[in-house]
Amino acid sequence: MKKVLFLFAVLLCAAVLSAEAPDAGFSYSGYARGGIAGNARGEALGTANPFTANGAYSQARFANESNYSEHLFRFTGLGDAMWWQINTRIALDIPGFPKGWNNISDLEYGIILPEAYIRMGWNEKPVSVWVGNRYHDSIGINMYDYYINDMSGAYGGGVDGIALGSSTLDTGYFMAYGGSDNAAAVSPAIEREGTIHSLMVRPHFSLGDNRLSFKVVPSFATGSDDARYGGIFEADFEMSSFFGLAEGSTQFFGYYDLGTGVNNSEYCYYETDAYRTGGGFQGGAEFSDKISMRTTVMIESRGNQDSASDGIWTAFAIRPYYGFTNMFGITFEYDLDYFIYDDTSNDESMLNRFTLAPTLTIDSNGTVFSDPVIHAFVTYAIGDMDASVLLEDQDDQGFKYGLSFSVGW
Image (cartoon, rainbow, N blue to C red):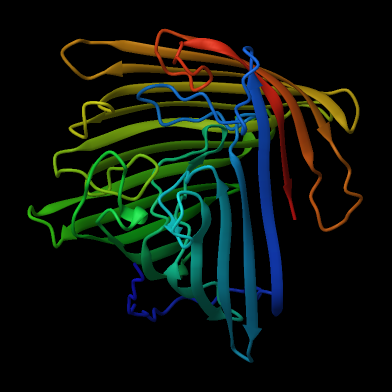
């Protein structure tokens, strides 16, 4: 159902700082990933769907990705004092939707509109104003394709880059509709009614080469039988090195959600007494021109949501890479999901995943494409749960093999 939302624009005063306006004209960029896979029984799986642990939100992206591509179309106009942009991002997702985005094709899979918004700013100031539908997934656990709090899919508006001395402030208002016809506010497991209203305040502080950010999002629901409210709190600290030991980056994060704002990978709401809290870090290191590594550690506790997801989830992943040449190397990844269910049975579940993948990086010679990466992978999963999507009879262990690729432009 087509929805029209009239949004307000807010003008705020900010300190004048030197800033470059974006380039004028039309631009296009994109990204694509995909793969094919089979299992040890010779059964073709079609696409390289991931192993997923019961109670865990994580999906190991490496060599386990669904076929997906997105395309960003942007037009920028420049004036004497101001600039403006029209941004539209179209995504093609097969076989299903990884997020609660707007499905403009009305199919089980197909065309998605994750972003459509207008943005404007001043040529000599960092502040900008936007209105529409925009990405809001500030903390993404990249190795798991998991976003701590993803409000993407909600309509809204806001102001970014308000200068406060050496720090900046982003603000925004969002509205997401309930009802089964709007995936932006609905989780398949829980039917919701009404509309979620949220206000966002997100300050950023520069600490030398590092950055500290907070995000506070109080929210409430209208149009439902029960009054519901809650919010989101996030904090993250980004370092410009890998723990100060090697070139790379490190991000520490923590979060607490209550009631409306509690979500898994969608912008949705539960009862007021539902909660979710957690933290961890992720990072990448370049030890030499041949050896690199990525790793993630996180723990999350949640309750009063539903019986299937209440409990404590612990996740760990490490992905070392060794390059024999500039084009060829080998990648290894180990993933662990451990979940303790919050019920009277005190059940536990665990899933281990091991992936080995010869890796080919094709030199694009400075063309419009980034260097395409191709993996020929073998994954073995073992655990004490019926969590594997590899085998049709839901055995808790097994092999999967195939090819995956990714490229940007």
